Image (tube, rainbow, N blue to C red; front, side, top):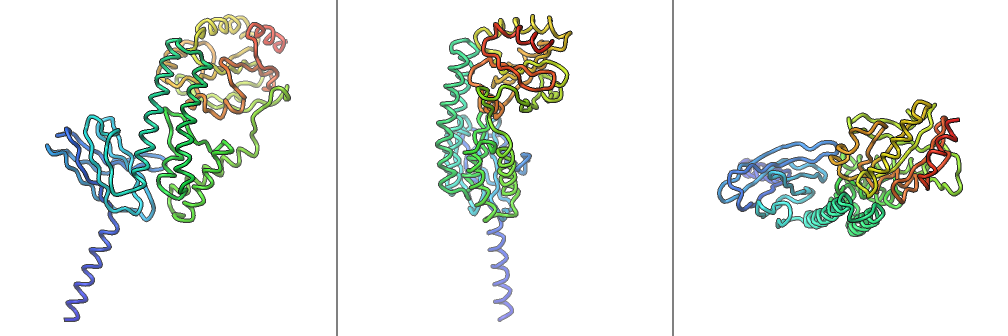
Length: 379
């Protein structure tokens, strides 16, 4: 009898352990019959499909997988729409949605963290939509580059202030980690290279290291925070009202063809115009035509241009930049780029002259004087 009781107890224990070591994501998606729903694992460096389900007429689905000892992120993908999900101590998450608004109007139950992640996702989508409208207005010359910068920053800053509250409220939560690493149209919202943002990286890293020291996510946020701290100790924005001649802060960005070109690698021995610009501002074609005349006139004497586009639309930038005769690169972080902060860029276009030693010797405030400045340092 004791043997039977012991065996039953062991079986129940094993069943209990199996239950506790698995998580379930289940629910219903209306108007999606015959479509494939994918479950993807979102790691530090890659996204992997780990399961899938063909939806029946009712739209029911159920995924059951092994659960890690620490929080991890997953994604439900239907066509081009995705829902982000965090799995921590929760065993079962329920999701209800309609295929037409799968990633927008879904209902999620069973996890407070995932309710917050949904709120952040909705706010991120709304902010992305605002930035897309600003992009179109700039391309249609309905607003100036300065208005674009100011309005875009205002929109992203509003998102950032709300997202920051999710981080400060509970830095050790999955929602805080999610908020810290979100991007909008390719823009990094919380940069480890920004002094204020780096404190948030430190807060999340400290809590995750304490709670989940073996987690790859914990190691990732810790490393990002440390890299930011190291850079902040050595790199400060340049004050060109004080510093007249200084070694250029390096830039390493990609051209239209995908080749990464480092400013320091091409600056030695030539006079270089480093310019920050957008190709869809009013007067941009005329501005580039003016640059082309100066470039053609002096390139034989050692003059070159390294032009950094801050356009957020990569496809449109490629179409505009593909035939330019100089080095044209794009910063995908646009107005929120650390490079923009380093060089104190507040208006577009903004240019700097680098001498043959790669030192910044002039900031171009009036482009009517550009040719004179180029000639001065070509001598």
